[in-house]
Length: 190
Image 1 (cartoon, rainbow, N blue to C red):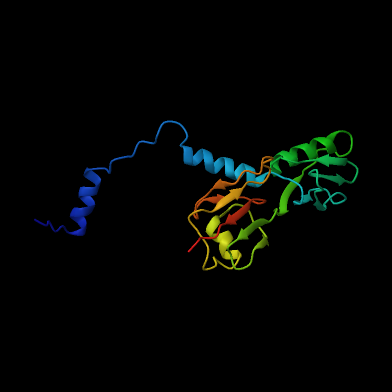
Image 2: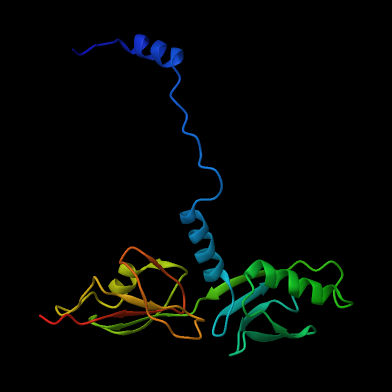
């Protein structure tokens, strides 16, 4: 049986019975934790990144990080920011400048260029592709021109940037890759 209500009756019914509230799960969910970890890794500075420092006219500029994740800042000298987030780098630079160089320094660090994402194997144009932060495997494959007809897209692996063991870890098309990661698309046999 279907009940038909006027708009006024529907509004009155909505006021009388509030919608049930979903109870949030206790503690952080694994998905939230993984997303937070991915974001922290993507935002950390490393070799080949480029940072822009604003705040002091004589010190503002664009700085490329060397292989050790360091750069030289006028007056402050050699700064190592490898593995730090942009906010942590801001605090470190401000602390160095406040040590007798600048009164109440205001520093802002923005990552201007992330490490590239590398896509190899059975894609149309294997190579290094500019990254603008975390992206999906499928988006990275699209940057490489898509799969070849021989691609086995169910067996994709990723080597994470900074993994000293260079372990190839299975990954799905909708999973997230970070700047500096290497995606490998294998060949299928038939």
